[in-house]
Length: 119
Image 1 (cartoon, rainbow, N blue to C red):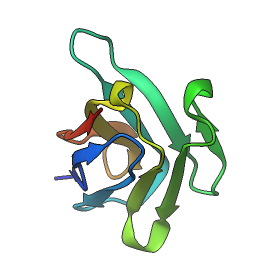
Image 2: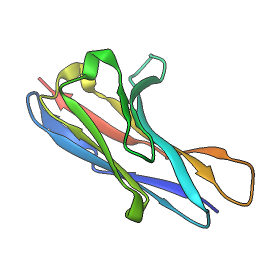
Image 3: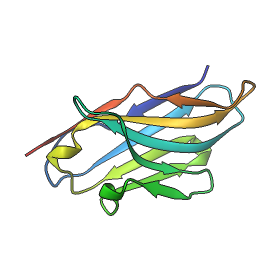
């Protein structure tokens, strides 16, 4: 069974930084695109950033320059470095991964990690 486990969330003051991690475990062949999304209270889940296996990245326009996505294919892990955090970045952050296994390619989601930015 494939699982994605996020870590690194927490409480930080405005202007601070956090680094989120998301590790995939289980039995599978490979992971294609991995990504981060976030959902603030009473708002829809939105894209933060994605990264392909080859390292091509895509960011939400409003987050370019402050957030950086990266991955370690050997560790099946994706990271999100968040700098200059603002109170409006407060949300539950979810990772996802397009995983190829014996089953058809499936998009898996993590359980989410809370990020709270205080003013």
